[in-house]
Length: 212
Figure 1 (cartoon, rainbow, N blue to C red):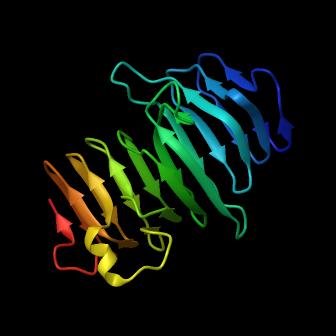
Figure 2 (cartoon, rainbow, N blue to C red):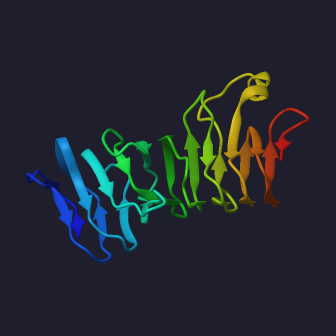
């Protein structure tokens, strides 16, 4: 399913069982309800391009462990910067609900905000900027984060260096893997065990930038 224009249908987009790919470069609108409903226990994919709009909620199915099986890919479109917000785990109020994987494509830049707890995987192949002054990426138990060369996780604004004393760029709940070949600005806290592979830069502007 590809959207390059505007869809304002009563149900907007609703799918049945089986994997599905939805590509949005335009507008999908259902402001007072669910714009997209993916009724599938198998892996489904939502590709979003900078400048695209979804008015309304986007829901996909979770398994018995309350883990989403859908994936959101944040794509590149020239030099445009994308913005996405509203991730969460409340089936009644979260804008994006039931997605277990989020990835940023190579060459893409996205501003991301919302509750990213309990993700199975977050892969950043471009630039992912978390709006602050809140914590950046929160990984659920066993989650994996990959930041490739040129990738970035950190605040989107310029602040005095002493601010990073209290800024957690990445927080892991346990058993996490962080594979960094890019740039992380802020503290990293992996609780209850985890692995950090660093080939890039971790800049917390303090001595205890890592806590495991």
